[in-house]
Length: 257
Image 1: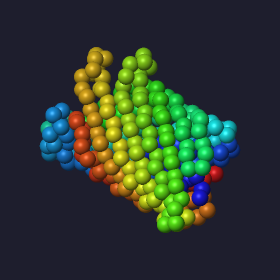
Image 2: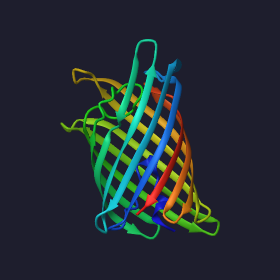
Image 3: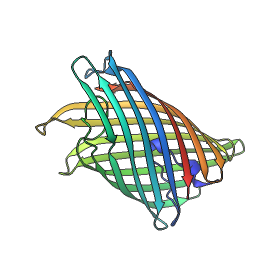
């Protein structure tokens, strides 16, 4: 089984590092929609609407046996409307540049840590985006396990990330869990859960709002050529606070090199 079978693009890649001189490029396109939002008291209400289209690229490049360069960004076209305001944005999402060190790897187990610098996109950080506000530094821990059985291969990937701003003040925490099943060499099914918690900054630098979002995604991945994979998935926000209830369709292509 090739290592790409463990990688999960919506989970910010995975705990299995790339080999030295090898890498992976994942390109995804997503279409997002919402007409409900979770208020500060978590009560869900209707609003005028939210749409977003996104093309995202992940890059992983193995530098040494234990060290891998990681990076990702996206181009977004976003439109958010409620009774009091309208936010439109076209341009790059946050840019992540980081290094991942794999300190443990053996059959069926991989553990790694990652340090990344996140360059803020400049998007007004309100309901549309449960992410950081301003440049941040992220520290991420990753653990992956896999098991081969007579009925196929099973795997999971768990990640926890903490972001701090450039002054070292807590910004946000992000968690991801992926459960996967690979019945054949060419097919994989992945169920993913995402949890994000952010403390927003007001324009004067004070903390003015807590935002959270819990969402799930189900994806099907197919190897259509050696080293080439296609992904089809759907994503849904399950709960939140000061966040939109997103529904999304996601397609992607993974390329090993």
